[in-house]
Length: 128
Image 1: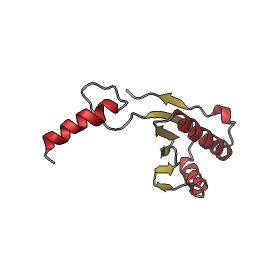
Image 2: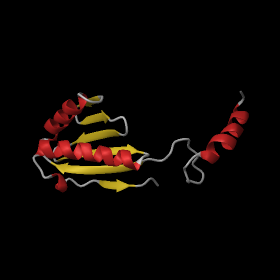
Image 3: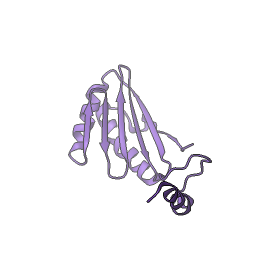
Image 4: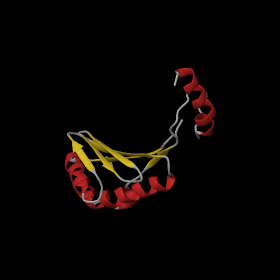
């Protein structure tokens, strides 16, 4: 298949059906919604390891140094830590999946950090 034919097929079949509305930036992926929380802590490395160990019994979860990834089947979760905080972000194209991931992480974070779950605030953002 030559490239111009491939581009015409792409433009005719796939792009009109994509759910993206970004002029001049064609993509085949639906844009993701994102949610982020920041937990102020000086012991983020401990929480990172404990979160991964807990969720690794249910789903793939890996960590290395200051980063971790938890592979929920409905939405991947990324954790980054530094000396002052732990940043947790979740990205998916499904609002229900975002809520489910937030709830599961909030519940476990509240246990680990001994905080009331209502103090853990998620900030959602829509794609550009």
